[in-house]
Length: 395
Image (tube, rainbow, N blue to C red):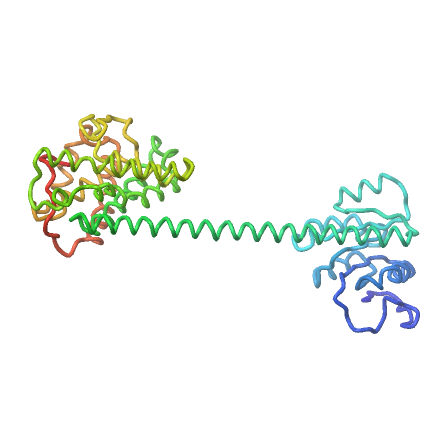
């Protein structure tokens, strides 16, 4: 037992002052300015707990600051800080807020008991204490604290597990995107640079749109990240196109182009089916499906596969459309030369309100410095030979 400003009882007569080696027992901080009370209560509890004792509220706070006990037995009436004041301070400190405090008082008045509970105490024992009541109350509140601690640890463990599984799911999702994108790249003659460039264009456009009132609610940071991750799958449906058409080193015939256009429905349907297999959940798959199916729709209604117009076209696809066309314009292919950036921008602006959502074009123009930087950063080393030319037109 540690005592502050207390006369020390003789070792032979005080269980609390035993010279035995420290034991791994729950710690009870006993706070009372009367030595006799400390002696009696210590004697009642010393066989079950490690007792630390102090004689004032100020000393109690210092003791808790030095080493947080498992439970506090706190006298109410003391010089200096009284029990209610000490209890409030312990409850306000995150380090000791969960330590149960049992108030000890000689007054049986219910008003004092209510005041103690308001201060944060968990129990109230009237002195002189009944030994069985004291031991039972201390054991009960220590058990409750231990149970609460285990529940918190369990909750934290579950939270960590959820975070870990979410990270694993995100990694698996990213790996799936990379695998599908790489598969498309091996079959199509588009370059890996095209996939990376369009992905970053999409994010730059979305972030610019997010600064406007029309799109602030729809384009949250979480949605923009999903757009960024989904964009590489915009042409995933080309996996289902025959190589004779997909890799044709020349302009497609109208019949061949009709077949080529089905890559939108192939990709959109496959991703939508994957979403259904996930129980209808998964914003990532929903957005990926929208982009794959609708990124060749036109604002004026002349696109494919569904002939959607205006805001009937999903926003994700409207953003992807301009990113995809811009990159096609500035990229060299075996069937065409690359256009200069300024000429590509002129053509895109000319299609404002026709091929593209006017507000998306405006955002693309505002993001032009970043767009150019992305194009340089992920530039192709050179053209990939072979590959079908699209039908005449900006798409």
